[in-house]
Length: 330
Image 1: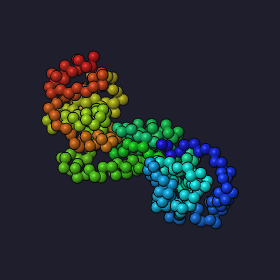
Image 2: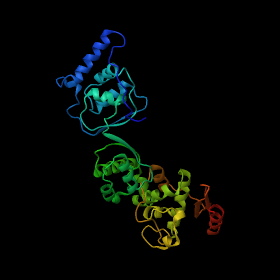
Image 3: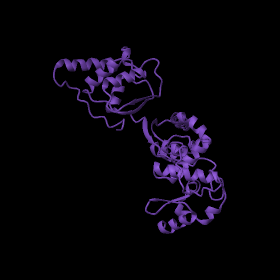
């Protein structure tokens, strides 16, 4: 569920007894009526940019306690009171929230019950396998006027380690801040794989490059593991990978659009003229493909292709592969 749906009109009239309306007025006065009621303001040690994840099914009390622990509000009890009296005990919204400044508890309660963040934040979804250029395009679409060129220039060296996921970011986010956030998430997601990568015999960079190929070459986890096994085997045997995915990265051409001239033009990303992996990752892989690159499945296959029907076919010999080409790539 989105963290910022439209906030409906609040009926400020008492629903039953006069004391309910009186409590409501007192509660609002604590927060809106003046800064002398310190308890309604954010804690002095609040850190701008603090992020809070509200889990599905969280109660108002659980959420208030979490906000208190994260130092977004001074009082969980007051938060609960405001939600009950000002917002008629409306349930809190599940999602990821970031607080760019020290909101008072009334504002926080409004946000978490459907009031949004006043348009200061946007939800960004980066699909698995997205390249730096594609991430820049996503950002530009979500934040008109965002400096995409600066991002591409600064993020290129980190291609492969900018973790694809859904983020809630401020519209004022800079290229440097976004890069740092994506790198930090990558580090968090892969920290438990360091020992396994060392034991694999490959460097972390090699694993990530392979994973970026798998994002384009495989349609699911099962395919990815088998293709990973085929490609690592080809590398070990000194055979060129002969995969088309890097051409989409460098030339923006699909397999069907490639010409013989394209395949014959040598370069660091041409897996037909050169053996081994491309020079860099060709996108930013997700965890499924990273694990497939790290944990390949052995098979007797040396070739594979996706037919025009979308189904993958494997082959043990080049002759079998040619038959599959003629049969399924008509």
